[in-house]
Image 1 (cartoon, rainbow, N blue to C red):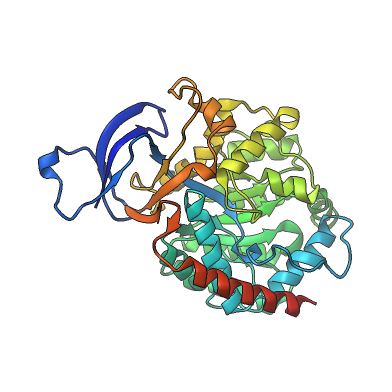
Image 2 (cartoon, rainbow, N blue to C red):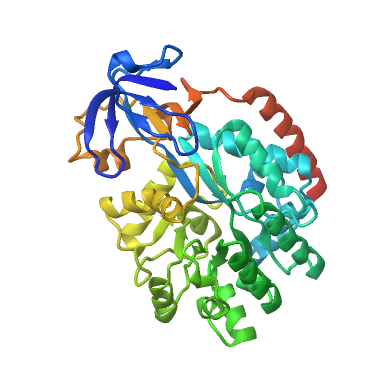
Length: 420
């Protein structure tokens, strides 16, 4: 157990401030307790949080471990002129080049980055078409080593042929038989009807949901209308994708009014990835007509959810209906998604300690102003995941970060050479 002393606890839902000592239980369903001093076990680790703020840690609604080794890589063979070419010449070239050593390094450095940014739970969407079988377990073990919770899926697609699509289905079935996860699909324009229906059937069988990119770019809608005489969300709805409360629809940039109403009326969730949309020039997210089941992700751009929230807020000034309260609600909605669907690993005992020495008063009434204009990942000192201290004074405690980074640089070089 861990005893946090002399800190100010901020309830993540009510934003009530409470100056108190409390104990953090270990385990995937652990709690925080407020016992009297004489009840504190003798082997409890004590952390002095004087002058610091403690609140629930963060979670990422849409990540891509496979992008972790892309930073600084060589320019693509052709300068992409649109989103389909970005996929073709950059990301599909990268994911086809991944092997298991690269995947493991990608997962380890992603989990470390998440921990250092106060993120203790990640919903990931993975692709490695020529290293499919066992890829999800490789990622899961790496995340477990660092101590970051996860909800994984394999990005099933027909873009590399029916054999690899079947491997994706098999990998998903094998993984879901032993761990919590989702059934992943890439996007409508890379998934035929047979694979789409098989994925939905698998989600029904495993009592899961679908995690898929939806209308990220206009080309996705154009392809769907040309080939299926339907819009993307209509096609997904007809196939049963929207029936699951565990379903996650990524991006949803180019939905028309009818599609938005279908999403709103369904139990499915939407994940917003503002920085990725800006980077790929695919358009701007708008929540109009979609409903309130919206959470935030990074789409593999980085692992800093505080940064994602700020970008969603600032971009939303021009393209969305979003204010202080709505930004924070979307930032925290991932916890509601996880809890309402019974996923483990995001209980009360996931906490972040902030050394936020503000030059102005911080209270319940002005917390959201500090959240958007003051609090940053650099203020994180300690992170507790499932009741275990995985970051102490800014340093990872569970793995050797220096060794992992040294290895990841070697794997990145291997990946880049392979992509030439």
